[in-house]
Length: 394
Image: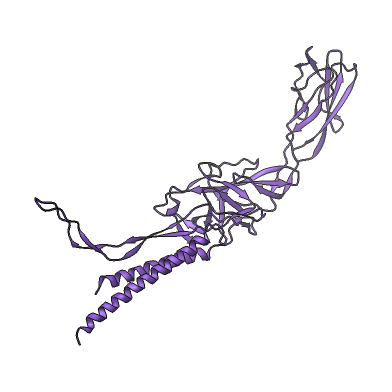
């Protein structure tokens, strides 16, 4: 049989595969996080009709004469170019701006995806549309996150509580007037918390003396410590009395107070206690941290979404559902937080759209169609030649 007949058949098969790849790209033009595939052709073995000849005295060398035996699919690669952003304003939607993959667990198998359309299930677990559990690091009770620790399922139950914390330190800042009359009293107040979150009123009374100022503390009107003197140098800097400790164990920092004339600006600045609070809402930072807003007016990290990068992301195997799994040629996942180690930043309330370029794909359709048509003509012509050979015997 004619070699051209089988070359044409191989061309039909290769261009049919090209049509399949292009059709799949177009079908996923609106799939979140989809990455388009590209196909490469490669010629098959060539039959040697005449071997190359070396130059001899009086005769030049000759090149080999070869006839190709068709075409085959060399490979189908995935294009991981960044897709456009689509704003959704859903707090659970996330988009990776840059390199990296979300990590998703299904059973005991680890998958990776660029599609950040997540939601919470009935147990407060962050999941994909088909139930995959998003991986990351949970925050400790004090809000710290150990990104070197083991990965776990990101969980954010509605009943999440921020525990109460007692006030152990408080700070007062400003200036006590050096020219105030002896006996002048300045009262300043700040709310503090007990271990169970009960709010109390800590009051400091600053009384002007001939030597400087005396400080006395009360909590909810009851005396909470001895009278402590404060003295200042002639230039207004503080000499003594930088810390006042109440009987309840609250260390009041007065070290930044000054003693200039004509200014009365002393005020309570801060304290480190808090009441208990329930989770109201959350936002996501660029580093993947889930920051919860609680009913007590405070915010605290609840967890952090992990990202994975690969030495050869094109070596990943598509597992369906916009998921990928590792292969021997992709390399192992390099896990870390967003914004570190070459990983991209995360954007909340947005999704990454498909990176399919319709103009390019429709052009590929035309190329594949014409390539298929041309190879079918080769088969038709080869058939006509075979028919002429058969007709010789009549």
